[in-house]
Image (cartoon, rainbow, N blue to C red; front, top):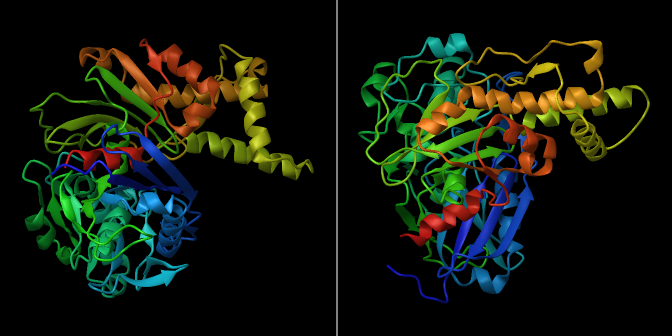
Amino acid sequence: MELESSSLVLGIDVGTSSVKAVLLEPVSGEVLHSESRDTRAGLESEGGAQGKEQDVCQIIRTLNDCLTALPRDGLRKVSRIGVSGQMHGVLFWRTNQGCHWINSENLRVFEPKEVSRLVTWEDGRCTTDFLSSLPQPQSHINLSSGFGCATIFWYLKNRPEFLQQYDVAGTIQDYVVAMLCGLQKPLMSVQNAASWGYFNTRTKTWNMDILQEWRFPTLFLPNILDAGSRAGKTTYEWCGIPQGADVGVALGDFQCSVYSSLSESSDAVLNISTSAQLTFSMPEGFQPEDHPSPAQAVTYFPYFKDRYLAVAASLNGGNVFASFVTMLAQWTAELGLETSDSNIYSRVINAALSVNDPQLAICPTLFGERHSPDSHAYVSNLTLADLSLGHVTRALCRGIIENIHTMMPSHRLKESGIKRIIGSGSALARNDALKQEVERIFPFPVVYGKDVDSAVGAALVMLQQ
């Protein structure tokens, strides 16, 4: 069904650290308005030192604030809503009790009610030993800590009474769609289901036999729809958006970010934000093999229209550089010299730009990797000549890029017909030393400025419906 020319499409991305909303003009696909807000939703985890949890109430409050900052007359014209968000994570709620709708400043919004915390993709409570004790999935994606089903297994073993409080679950974006559409049981796209584990993308079904044999609470598993399908319609007016607007099934933020920028089959996208990903689209008809080696660095994410993305998804990107800056700020404070993180950030990059070829080498895997969860960061080849701030910073930038190049080397890209790399992401955009290392290590033209945007991608997907 075609959109009326006066209608607008709303794209939403509920990310790890921020929420973004865009209004798209349907004919040109132009972004008319855009708003983003940091969620600041992190909580001290109940899952121990390795746990990563977020406050769902704070996330939804930020989402409502983000929408109300958009022009009121534009929101009234919204007829379709696309939603994406951080993958792998899980939260729980009770049927028909997940939220209540209230009036706030003359606008209708929803607030979470009897909802658990969000256990995010960064969660590390599922140790290697714990994961090895679980059944082997019938899937082309290996199970990792932070995956929804792994987290549910952890609760089943360690806190079964917690699960008894709830009867449905989903990702944070699935929750948003379920609340907007008044769904009793959440719907989940193939993209998000694959990110939970124990899901077969060929049959588009959960591994029910395996899970039931292990007494997994399968009532928490959402019903499945193809990515790009419609989940329902808004049951209430929301922030000025009319009741009855079409809402798409929630999508993965990674797939939507790629969808917003990948225009040629010969392009690869390198995105460095909190983490880092290098990806390209596999040919039509490609099917990944089940039970890949746990040490395999490249995984295959379901994309759109039954196609897959080849993905080297590193857990180490801008977060490593941010940890480096935080460390320097702490050292500076301990020396009695106060300065801002932003000042340190700009100074260390300038120092790195004055250094071309350090002998010092830094392996940046501070957060491990999914294919190597027990790996650690380390420094090697340290000499007196490489002790300056510029040498260390340049070596760290080089290490971040070399790490992702190790996961998906240049020869693999060439064999797949890749001719150009689209460089994007907040960490890459802010760091010229990182850009220089990309251009040094990858023998392809690198194009910047065509930034990936999951909210835009979610809206563009809805334009095709």
